[in-house]
Length: 559
Ligand SMILES: *[C@@H]1O[C@H](CO)[C@@H](O)[C@H](O)[C@H]1NC(C)=O
Image 1 (cartoon, helix red, strand yellow):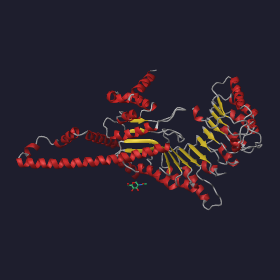
Image 2 (cartoon, rainbow, N blue to C red; image 1 turned 60 degrees about the vertical axis):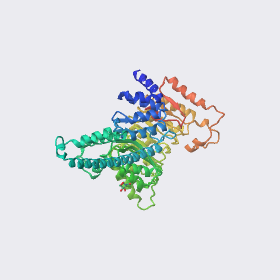
Image 3 (cartoon, rainbow, N blue to C red; image 1 turned 90 degrees about the horizontal axis):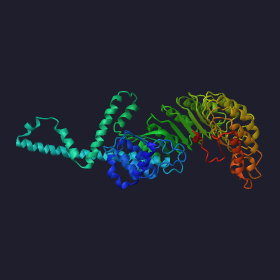
Image 4 (cartoon, rainbow, N blue to C red; image 1 turned 90 degrees about the vertical axis):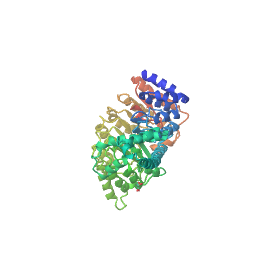
């Protein structure tokens, strides 16, 4: 209630920018956060800039998890924020030492976002480089002034000496010079005052870093510390890097200035193994939680080359590879060695808990990939992997089976021969599995019927996705009758039943055919939906939602 009142007032206050010079300096620091939130919500870039430039707290966090349907912050507001961070470096009212922008671009790239991950990364890197250039300029100005001051002092001394007063004046206080500096800077222009602010904060930072100075023993740590001695603000963000932005990102990561970039999740697209290497070499090693590589032609050997590097990031818990040409070709020389290197490399990823492999063509090699991982995985995504019966048999007995919370096996064709493995896997993981996708797996009424008892045993399952499987209305009805008896289930994504398609669909349609084949416009599509929802209603469940909307389905909505 009180919070709401604060929010309402904050909106009102930031809505009139012309009045801000009047109130801004009287605002207590605990009101800056609600004011900034209001400025973002009502898209007031000027207010964002003024608040951020004099941010009174040690850390500022913008981003975080967005509520479903909530749009990301507006581009102008983000740009105002970044500019104000740079201005704040030389504003002594600004106490910011940590700027946390993690999650601002969303895990999935925030397509259609007002400021997507790619452009935000470029803007951030530009800010880092500019801040460094700005500091250099200031230092030059500072040096110039020092020189002038000394020559002025020398001139004074010459005059004093001439007058025979030199000795007498120097005796009372040796602190003359520093108080002189103080007076000069304080009585100077606004620019001088700003420099003073920077210097003070740099000194404070150095003191703060002091006690840790002896701890690092590796060369890299020392280097980082040395570079870090200028750092005023640590900027944490998720970085999205592609071929066009790579150069910019490299420059920003390699620059030692007042802003230091740290990466939480790194996503790279369409860049080479050596470029990825360079980035990983430059990234601060603490704090990187995940790496996501997409549409980059790594090959088995390329990935094997990157893994030792990845193992030097102690907090890395997520690795995602999406269309990385990891084709295993037995006829190519050296493939077996590369695969062995891969396995050994994966064994070094001590904290890995999430592995997503999309569209790698490594049939029959799942054991090689997963068996060497030191920790059991909690999230495993293997869509479009052409998993073989032996892959699934391995998975169902692997050390990951009992800990999985999320499992995505979509677009791997299941049949009678693989079903026993799937059932074993589901029974192994029944106490932990929360999200399961078996979309596009070729599940017919008969196959699904055999699977239903195992699915029903998943006690903590929250979401189940079964889109693009060739099921009939009767198969769907059985599915929903089972679903209403699963106490944790909140979301069920079901496929359009075969009856809803125009005639001519093959007997066992592929998921691509189910996706492309036109639905029959003469049948009422909402019939299926209302029929299934009646089953839910009759069961008395009100917390289970059904959908056949593949594009808008989001399992994370139930978390
Ligand atoms: C980083 O900067 C240093 C010095 O400015 C330069 O010698 C080095 O080549 C740069 N490294 C990368 C990877 O860009």
